[in-house]
Image (tube, rainbow, N blue to C red):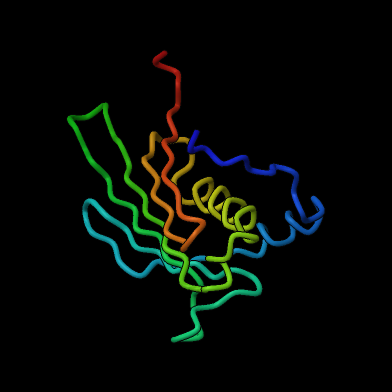
Length: 129
């Protein structure tokens, strides 16, 4: 069996997790007809090279006709502190908040790049099922 057992018990208090999530800010860097790029500022983290945004999100819209919209989202965490295995829950916390704020409830394919904490996920509305 290749699957790892992941401890889902948060290592941070709910108050601290809420404080971190509320501290996330965004700056839109680029927009075209089918894509957006956002710089993401995370409390306590930064890109070590630029000393700026700790992450970036690229949101690409696949438009099919007038009813079907599917979104591909890539989040890249540039702060190496977020690449450490013990930061997995923090990466997931930040990612959930970023998705909720930038994409909402739209059907989304997500790819997270955070060193050892990288993962892929699919968010589907489920109302069609």
